[in-house]
Length: 500
Image 1 (tube, rainbow, N blue to C red):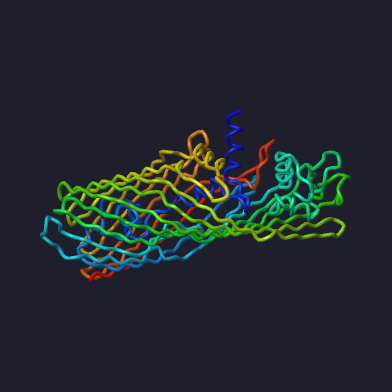
Image 2: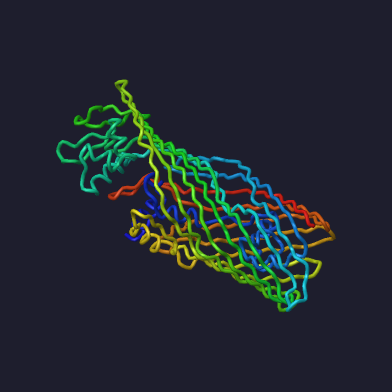
């Protein structure tokens, strides 16, 4: 029984959220980032919490600014190929999307050494780091002999206690009302304010394509320095932004001419339906990061950093449409109104502990441990308190998720050779986690760099894998087929820097 409930809950968790509702899915989507915004940090698995002198440290441990001995300008170009494999009702599909972005643009001003009161070095930095890439394409298809997305509309109405035809537009303008207006739902003459579907017993071929675009990035201003070349400190003020866009097309078709609807409906010969949804989310926020690095001896560095929660002001814009066709040649289509909603999102607190060993001119080894409290995410708005949604966040997400990063760099003359690995554990509490799709991430990284006194160029590569569970809709009374989405990201970053 517990396994059944777990499966139903997971299906619900990854149900594509109703376009006029914000949920725990938003909290998770905007709380997770990617490793490395520069080629050097990417190639070492993002393990830069105790190293410094790389612009990515603004987003990890800003105390690393204190290690800069020269001013520097850096810029990066990123390339990513994302492959997603799906297996839905024994039908396998695969999709790829290639994207280009700018992971990093930064300026660091290093001030000359001073002997006053033991302060040795100061640095000021500002710029941009890209923290997540949302570009992806998903496609799945298969014949569902048990139920239909139309059942999810009638189920929702039933659970809400029924709805008159006039109330359908008021409360279900982006879903059930569209099905009603296109004759996919009809009033149940035997059950007041309830509805019946033209696909009462399943049997349709279901397919869906989902295309997402955008990303997250952060504009940063940071200050750091060193005391007696032993203790390094830093503070980053971050101004993150979100740009997320999703387009979904869901279809059901009676390819085998097996579906019969019943005499109570206007049309008993269903052929096809199409349900299109669009969502665009933008957000701007604020956070702060505080870090310290201690160097007890020249070859050891110990780092610690805390990241405050990020406070976002969010805006959603959404719409949907539905069309239907029947065997007698009739076809219908209907559009929803344009919807919009503004709300606030708070993403988790983080803490990072780091350790690095420096082997002079030969290379280094670095490790990071990161703790994240996903259960601390929170939604709120001026006209709605999101109490139920926040209870779900607190219940299903882990309050102590552990992430691990490690990297090594070997030097030979002006060249550096790097490798790394990162593991991000599941954001879910164990009882709400499905083993094969718990969203843990594992990344393997590597790269090479060339450095001269005034110039350097780095190239980094990462291979990342994660699995997610996806279900097109949910029902309160039976399971709905879903698919494990196997995502593979191949990412390359090239960084060019100039020192002055």
